[in-house]
Image 1 (cartoon, one colour):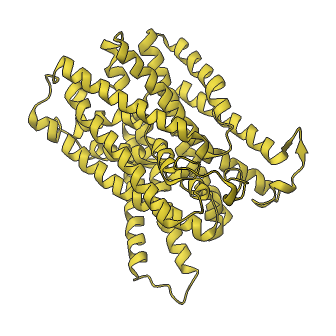
Image 2 (spheres, rainbow, N blue to C red):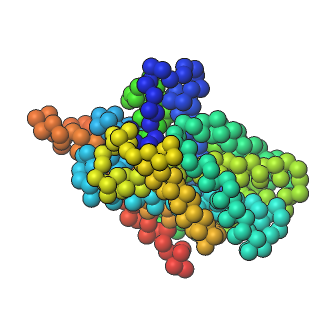
Image 3 (tube, rainbow, N blue to C red):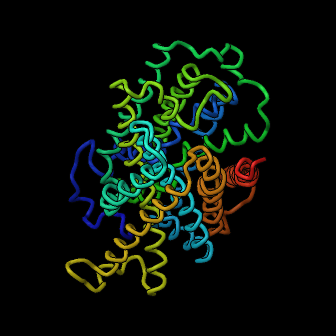
Length: 436
């Protein structure tokens, strides 16, 4: 297990309910990988399409996410590979592996940039800063906060910070609920448009709401690594529990913030780019200021989960270029106490953070990047790759393979849905960017 799995024997690993690799901390890490900037923009889409439609999208998206996570974990366990690139190479071809890794990198780069955009928004709201000051702040956060944290070797290392950051986002929802109670229901809200939207929503708007839902639940990029870290050993049952727990936590937060966000800030055009900007009029309130800082802490924690898959892809590319396998690190040359492979990993991690900082400085709109990444990369990683893996796994046993078996028919249906979300979702996300 290259770079991200523990090198210690499992029998020697620490026991305890919150140990690295336990079901509950793994579920917390996986839910934190999903719960990030999506919380801040989901109420804006609910304001366009209505709470009822948004709720149904969230419920449907949660169900698809659980199924997708289970497929990925099954493929990882049966191939004994713990990265998207390695599983794809085992089941298909190195070219497929490189393409899948590239799409995963696009997904994680866009999401990570979104989190730094949120940090920039918090800075602007709190200090009324201009664009230059905002860009400088984003760069400093990237250098002094994100770079050091990006060097951690295990996803499970983040479990304590992940728990605290989820609590921080719950506090943000409580603050939005306070704003609603203090200011009253926004004058633009009626029973009808609260439930069904302000009217005039086009298929493109509905599709972008789905794109945001896909992004909001997307945590599949960490599933292979977390499956490999599961103790006492990777198992389908354990990862199914992790999937249900993590997705339920995400659903609760998204549904709650959709309801109170629409009631507090209104429907249609009344909603701004994110809840951070919506809270700007009351930013001097102490609890609002604390909630904004809590948002910053939460998204910076989430940022780290998106760095791991990028590091893993870059490490895979370097490994292939050097003609090595995933088990060769112990045989590698050592410089200053670290293997050459580890030095490559450190350089990849720091370079990735620098690239994300550059993207966040250039792009300032949160919803734009959420919609596009949700449609393009997240849909591919979440709903196209997993069923392809399952079909390829079963075709390895030609005697027992049948296109009409229940598992294969379900996988083909899942793949068809994924292709639709990928193609039409990307088209819907691009139109607003082009000004249509």
